[in-house]
Amino acid sequence: MAVSDEVLDELRAGLPEGVVVTGADAVEKYRHDWSRDPSAGTPDAVVRAQDAGQVQVAMRWAATHRVPVVPRGAGSGLSGGSSAVDGGIVLSLERMTDIEIDTSCQVAVVEPGAFNKDVKAAAAKEGLWYPPDPSSFEICSIGGNVATNAGGLCCVKYGVTTDYVLGLDVVLADGTLVTLGGKRIKDVAGLSLLKLFVGSEGTLGIVTRAILRLVPAQAVRSTLVATFPDVRAAAEAVVAMRATMRPCLCELMDNASINAVENYRSMGLDRSAGALLITQTDAPGEARGLELATMQAACTTAGSTECFVTDDPDEGELFVAARRSAFPAMEAMGSLLLEDVGAPIPLLPDLLDAIREVAERHDVPIPVVAHAGDGNTHPNIVYDPTDPDSERRARVAFREVMAAAIALGGTITGEHGVGKAKAIALPDQLGPDVMALNRRIKDALDPDGILNPGAVL
Ligand SMILES: Cc1cc2nc3c(=O)[nH]c(=O)nc-3n(C[C@H](O)[C@H](O)[C@H](O)COP(=O)(O)OP(=O)(O)OC[C@H]3O[C@@H](n4cnc5c(N)ncnc54)[C@H](O)[C@@H]3O)c2cc1C
Image 1 (cartoon, rainbow, N blue to C red):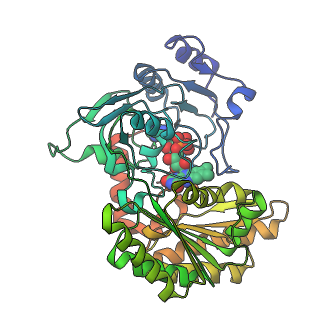
Image 2 (tube, rainbow, N blue to C red):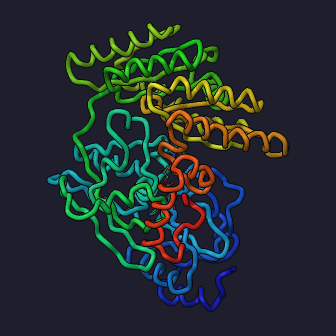
Image 3 (tube, rainbow, N blue to C red):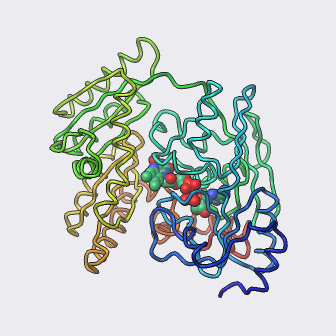
């Protein structure tokens, strides 16, 4: 049911002019995230908050009138997590972008709308580094990163977002603002509520400030690039190297994704390669040579057709940039159903085989890129939106890929979140008891279910 004008006027009255935006044209760009979820609704208003106080005002109003609220960062999500819902509002954090670096505590105190790249840049000015690096780091916000517990390319060695979250300010569904954690490195006082909000996808509260741990700047990286006759061989190389070491980046592209990138923007990749592995090491001194030798031996033993090593960071970055452009490149192939399935690392070759079998069974293209060193893959199912049968087959394949991951003891999502796109498959992974536990936590924090309805649970 739409929010009445009278009720919207109450919201406007509590906030400065221009914060509440209405009108079909103005709200259109807040309807979808990057997954372009076709079932996204149209919000009755968008609140473009400038500070935590305004978020509290909006949440108190929403709680009073039981209006659904979809929190939104930069809208780069890949699982429909910030897709709008009909009869609700979008709470956009895009205007809250302050970043403060505390060099003595080695933390960044960041408002949620700040982009990941800007936090990295601010830290770098002080000789520090914020490691989490989703491929989308130039277009995603810290609030969205915290809410999805974003991963990325260097996570194989340096961990994911949650490993860097020391503190959060969160506005709850009733408008209460709680401060969790702080600039302390160690703190076990009370239940681990801080971590409860990391990865909660806007369903438990709205992050209005984050305190992020920084580390000394990363050393320059050396890069090894190897080609393989097929993805299974490349995955076997990853399993072998991960058994004894941790590269600081370990990314895989299959033949279809290599060609998608080359069609989109030629980067000089070998179009005939069955798979490409890009691995990096930032180990100090002699250890670097040893790591490169280990990585190279793993590739050779697994049957690599070519191996190339460079210590030139710019040359290495060209390959990483090619990998980062895979998503926009695949978009050019048709409409996409975006997967994010993962498995325990030794089962990565089996997961890739299972994905290929699904693609063959349903005759749908499924180009794959993977944060292979984490066992986390992105098989993206391509379909023709003007062909109902192509879309039907793609949707069946989407469910089967997730089922295959679960069957291997894996997950339906390693880093993008469940959002609205994968909520249907979550019970298959978690089972009834864990689903019920999730539901009890959600009910305790958001009894009226106004925060991001339809996402996750
Ligand atoms: C080309 C491309 C590559 C990508 N690569 C990666 C990758 O390597 N690794 C990875 O993890 N992700 C990747 N992503 C996905 C996406 O960028 C991340 O999920 C990112 O964390 C989303 O941030 P956002 O600001 O865009 O959030 P949004 O898309 O706006 O929102 C994402 C979720 O967070 C919630 N949310 C947003 N802000 C807040 C807040 N302040 N408080 C509470 N909830 C909030 C929303 O409700 C939603 O559920 C990629 C996306 C693209 C387009």
